[in-house]
Length: 220
Image 1 (cartoon, rainbow, N blue to C red):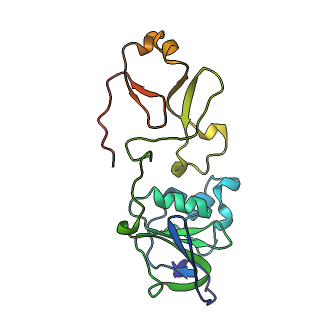
Image 2 (cartoon, one colour):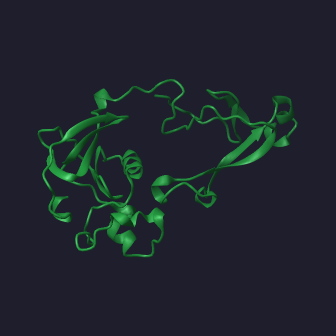
Image 3 (tube, helix red, strand yellow):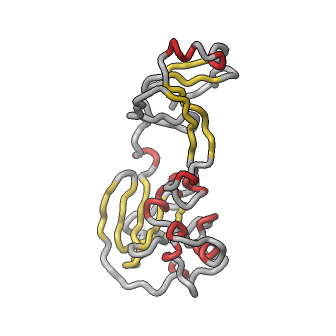
């Protein structure tokens, strides 16, 4: 992405390991994935307005229609990379909500220097943490630590962060994922809607129920 930014100052890289990504400050990995819907040029020369567009990361004169620059903060960049199958690393601007998704990992020897950016790379598959009991996977989401103080029938709403600018306001959670029924089992069975359903115990307690039979799940 060096052709899409002002000339960088040279600086020595330092390495910080945090979470699932290794950060190398003052460096980037050459070769970027297409920016997609969070492309700086498309968002910030179009109808997007407000802080959640992250248009402070847009560089007029450098970002054009073919630019791969993504306008998101670091949290958003890493979340977008996690949600993009081809993405294994991110180049994030250190002072602006701006970066690039990469399809390649770079070691320190193959990184290019740029004092404005920091490289965030995932570990190779063999070194990633193994799936642990109680974790979510592609077929089932699990949530631990949820408690309710009284009985209720609640609508469960979901926000797809990758396709929105943030999940902060109530209106962002526009996808209806299901219904949460909070009650004792005896009360639940008095509801005719649950007298002809298939239920299975959940890992963290409670039941998940389906009208059309239990789905076949393959846990990692």
